[in-house]
Length: 632
Image 1 (tube, rainbow, N blue to C red):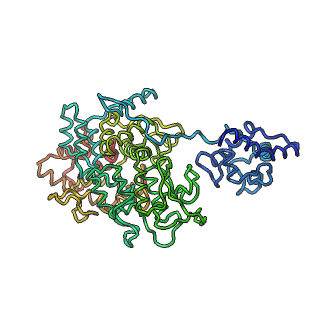
Image 2: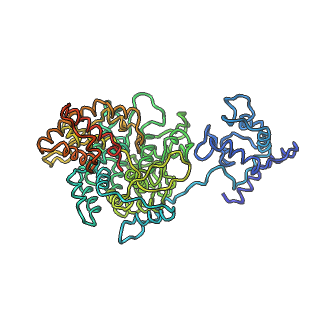
């Protein structure tokens, strides 16, 4: 609206209150000095900046009027007045702390009676970051090194930060192999890498790891299973209300399918890939916001665009700007029949209109058949004009490699990155490299900052803006932990325990079956592997009591370590190792480093006792070390 017209209409809205104040003889409230301080101190926490309890926003005059909580010119007809003057503790506002003072209450009364005067330039809303939808900043040219490092170096200079120390070669190979393949490096590979004097050995190692297609696919299955709600058993599979996409997904990772084609095949799918967009057909009655078309709306928004559409599937969101019509607009694209909108599970009588969340990218023709609407959506989602699409996935990959996203949380992509140039640069790099996710991972893994030592995780309670200081240590995922224990104990399950058929049938020697490809057990569930009835984009970072109990005396891990002790004692006999050599070999396999002299003294075996039990205890000790369970 033209600003002059807006001020004119606003003035008209204030006239009744002005006449009322003249009739009563009361002095109009001074908004800036009497009202705004009260709103900021006593109301903003619950009614601004994404928190709008009771559906009330006090960010602007328009938002207040839209809520219906205040009637300009009449305090007696305003819910705000009744809430601040009531004696009922359950209804009084603010709900905590002392009631407003008599002067504050009277000022608000005069403000309402005076027509809710509210200068346009004053707002309780913090200034919101707005990022252009299109990509605008490629990575800087850097012919001599990694362009990520140019941006990180400048960032550290601007923040006046010291650069973290470099990892030693043993730490680096362990970190990068766990991050890219989810496996511990063998002692032989570690020693070869450490002894090499090739100045390009780090880049060559990353390339060699990314070329191991089967190991790469097995590892990243967990990441995509979490995102795409794909599992091998559980809710919906028995009665046909859910469908696996496992075979399609594993082949796509094996082939390193370009990310834009990967997403196109998920949104407008062939039969073997349609399990994702169909979600779960729940038994019995469900809330209107959980029907399959709205699951589709919520899932594709969260996974591919970093948008939380769950709130907007029930009502206009209280946490961001998405509306009920936005959630239903995506749902209507997938729906086989006209879709009536429900607000808080109550029918509205309105039929949803198919639309994309970013109208400037393009429109959906709701008159087309469902398959053609899905084709249009796939085109818009992967359009070069939709910068949110590549930004979201590179942010997720950075979070997996660095421990924290450039934008945090990763599902709130409207938030500001700690480095907008790096976010845009990685997204542009992905597009320019034909959406090859391995190229993004390679770029990150070959950067100087990735080869630097990890830094402490900052306190979560701080309200200060996040400052990037380096790579953060990450807990192993449930699958990484189990794979590592299986590596150490030679406890790989046989082919019959695989959740999927081997997609590389031309391979005559079957590789070990990884934890990501078998049904979840109690240990993996306690270590954070989800049931995947919902999209999961990040797993809990903290150790829970249940995890501590399962790791300390759980039967599953105890059995693996018991078998592992037998394996290591047989290996000692075959290799004719001394006890000291056995401990050294074990440390190299577990931690990619030799044991120290003090560790050797503490862990030496006592052959007067039960040696089998001692080796079992030794395995448990090293597996419990934070150095083992953290990717540092």
